[in-house]
Image (cartoon, rainbow, N blue to C red; front, side):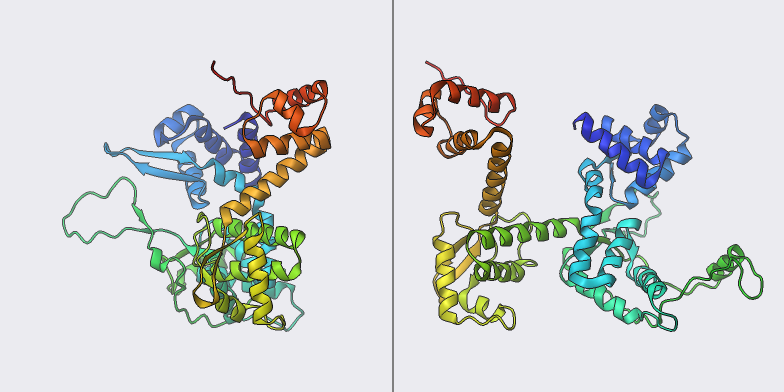
Length: 411
């Protein structure tokens, strides 16, 4: 990790969690995985504070732990996850555009707290929405629950791994750290909860009508607390699903710029049909028939089946190959070439950067090298039709900025 990335992680941890958590987190980023006592010794922090800091980091998926054969538990920072905190506002805004204010607050609560039960999220969000409503109006728990179910159905939220249960009756000593297991089938399964109630507004005064302080009221509430209906089932925001959504949006936008709005809507429909069935790292989507795509087009999008087939043929014949044909059954089977589309988008971004920094002639040379893979200086001059001295200067500029590399051939 570069020093700039470590510094950025340090600032993010300090802003969100304070100095102690920042000190422990940055120490793990710099040193790699370490056991508890070594962390406390190296950072000069008490064991109690280190434990609390690690609890916070684990709660927010910023640190993972692993039990070694000798029974030693080591903790390791997740640097990429820390850097993703920069995108929290974008995740929240995306949910707002897709699922309105209720969805926005659900994801915000999960990001702020790391992991929460569904019942806790529903109550928190209902209370927050009630605060913003006019007097006399409240948000029903059922409405928030419905939005939560929609988020789970589209995989924007997912269950956290559960602690593995051992059925052994032998009185063995407990393991040094719990083992977490993930059940793929239940990852997006929402528990059937009958959450009945409405959001509540906060009292403006620290004391209620009887003059009882808040702290005492809180204690009484804790003593009389009802059992949590979904206790032990915790949820978190699925950040990979958000990244998949951003990728799909970029592909749709690229198709709209290259062809037209109808083409982009067809590609959007194909991506929407495959968003849950296709893993985010898959090279292409699941094959979809022309008939399935036609039936799934948005209501009111008036194009005939014949016109759709013509568009699909044009998309499949396009040199960029964003859409590929994988068979002839069902009126033709089509896929989105995800990796190829992302490679094209990355190439276009690089060419744009080169043009902004070095001009159109440099961009022409860069595009040429990308296309031919390896070229000698004389070949660059000839193919790009640029004078020798100018081509040499441009190649040196890009080489010094690490946009191209030099490979020495063997005689």
